[in-house]
Length: 303
Image (tube, rainbow, N blue to C red):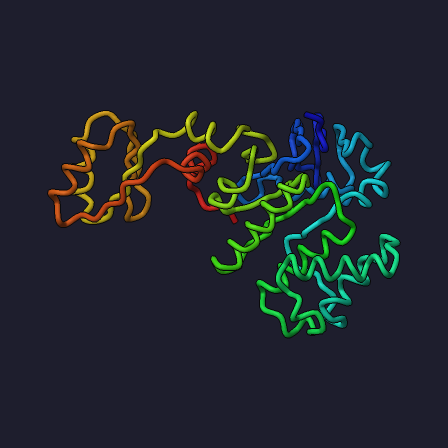
């Protein structure tokens, strides 16, 4: 499978501080590829370098086989970008925002009119075509920003935190549309803080921290490699919780705030024991990508 994005030895320095530290990355065509990491990990900087929005300090970037930034104009014509913050023009209506953006790509007027109708239908905004941006909800603005990124029918769509701050209904709607794009053969490259989003959407992902790639693989493979298959979350009186989990036998234990986590390959014995302690509440669940993320990057707060 050919690679749409090829990054080799990428480095970036700001004021003498290296924020991207020699990463290598290949994004296959027609896949959804995720970049995960805590705040300051280098995700958004990597996207900015990829899009030619910031000069590299070292290494090489190729998109569609073309060098960045030298071929930036040709690459932008084949790429759609959903930035972290919606930057729609408040002086225009919903349809006018798409029309003005389409003109940047030299799309003929008749073709552009058809494209706008298709995109508004795709993001469920047909009935808001003549609405001003100020009248839209946050979810509507995000859907319009995604539609705008698709005006030029791009082969690669880059999305920086596409569903941050949205309610669950809008988030699920956007997930569905992103899956539709992937099914249509688009290549998606996204950053997200939502582990569920990455687990649902991404064919493959990397986990970054402090400018380096810590791990790469499919969500399922990373969960299998780094997390015990069963997790028990316990809340309640500390001494009781610690005693119950300490006597559970082989397993990994963590205390985070008022919650106690127990990671194990077989939770049957400890579940049975916890069921007999009414002072404690517990949740028994399978391991997920968030467990992997926290194990690799730690639980310390990042500003």
